[in-house]
Picture 1 (cartoon, rainbow, N blue to C red):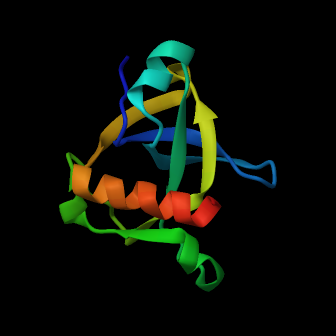
Picture 2: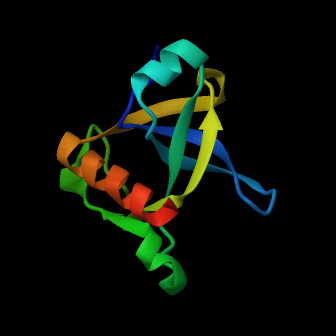
Length: 113
């Protein structure tokens, strides 16, 4: 298992409208799912701050991240989730610190359920 929960990775992200664009994303599913099933779930990171989706977003700051910094202000889109395998990942960029990762999980649960 090369990638684990809270890792920031770069993938070609499939959007709901069918377009595909390279984007950073966070591995949000637990490590057991990855080991047993061979895939994991990601939440999208973007620099776009849409007024309509702020209630579904989590703002990232450099102190929340280990091993990476974003060139622009970035947000986790907690309502945009996709499943991937290791072969879909272009590279690992860093990781989210545990405290902030837990807040992202809570925000994702709140946004979807």
